[in-house]
Image 1 (cartoon, one colour):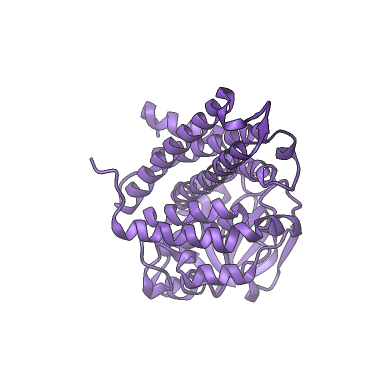
Image 2: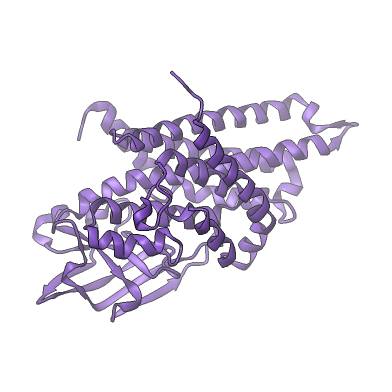
Length: 382
């Protein structure tokens, strides 16, 4: 068994690490405070291939694998979790289903501009009453001649306020339950009857937009359908499995940043005539952080390797997302504790890391859902 990365993967990781340290860490606090992403930085990320890591070159991507994607996203999120989730959605929730389920024409038209960084994509699944239970969605699409007419509202859509393109899930046959759900890939700017609704004011990852997508008799082309009618639910599950590797990587990046800040502060802060890192209580907190971070990384890299090699990875992705996000949350709680009062103020990044960490336990499947997925696999129940 070989735990070492290839020279190519090491090079990609190191490049992303340098980018994070030089381009993201210096502006992460500003991005959080202004609730605005940095267009110039996103453009540079696209030039480095970060917006379509595993998408082949002929469709605008970098043509790498999901292991490279996890390594890059971890480093980007270590510098700025808001920027990390923008990258994640473009790659996984949008890029993955278009490439995996789309036709050759759809790949060229809808993968290329997003993977190359010319535009952003989003994924319209969640609704007011359909989050953990996607089969409860109400958004519907009705075939009308050469068009589909969509009505409904999507909630909590990352990149929704900046996306030009979207993959949208809608009910096309309500008599069939979850087997009546279909996915579409559309150009939002060319869709009459579409509008961006409320942009949420969030606890964390405030530099990434989260908005409503509103469809009122929105007309889209008949050929906007992804795959076959009624295949949307299965497509969703596969897409979310892939996306969970991205969120796990985001959580890992947050946890790594937390450990870096905690170690740095513990060496500088003096109490009772000694630096904090000499106290066993501090050392134990750091040791627990480091151990869980390493365990999270191994789970993530295993899931990414499985996906890259076209092997089943549902259980492994759920484990990685669940464990890494719990690790990020626990690490930031302890990180704030180590910094004491300074951990509670915006002068230091620890409070931002704590706010950013929480959402990783919630989106792309709550950790309660992750435990159901893992248990279902362990018990052999499908």
